[in-house]
Length: 252
Image (cartoon, rainbow, N blue to C red; front, side, top):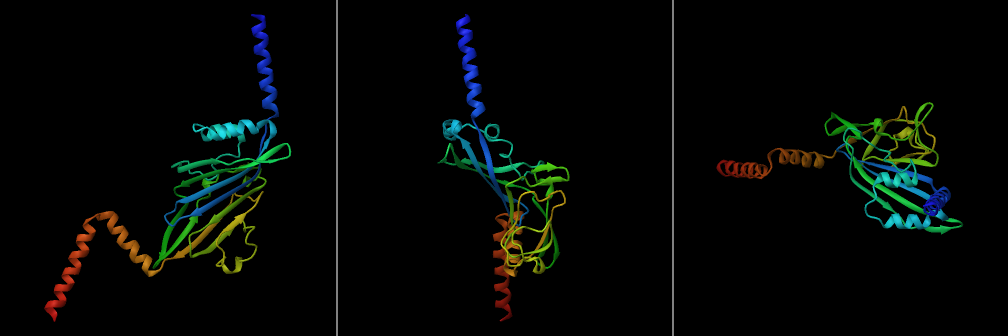
């Protein structure tokens, strides 16, 4: 019995030594939020992770596993492997986690871990004129680190927001780190705006307007009718065309 206990103790010590030398270190985090006109967003988070030599074999095994959850990976990689854009009322959907292959370097290696998911109600929208819509970013969905002054971007972190095409910025705070120019003309030539590490998010403001084309307005009108009436939409359109033809015929 003593021999069995001694072997068990040695195994525990060996495991503890192995795990203590194992290391996953996130060296860079890029969070990209692509906004949609329906107030939802597609989020992509790319983490650059350094893996110590002692963990390379375990990482390769975990990468091939099909049953590991986000919580499992978070316990391995650390607290930065979370959803940084999160609506607590509706959660996320279309979630994917893709751990990449390792590139060996020195006493370890680097890999990329990709998180991809969609979130509802990232913005709010109000129609302020004919075909003109005003959007406001919902900063309560941020799930970044909290500092003394409130929520901030963690070190080596970049947040990028991609508004829908045709956007015009009306208010933004803090000013983006990229592009460095464009504030005076509402960033009309920009396709995205980025903030880098240590930027404060506690008073984050991001507002913009979009003016739809007449074609988009007509398409949206018929889409809304179809959503409400379904196949009866085609019956109504056919009836309207028939009435117009009859009107034109009797008038001639």
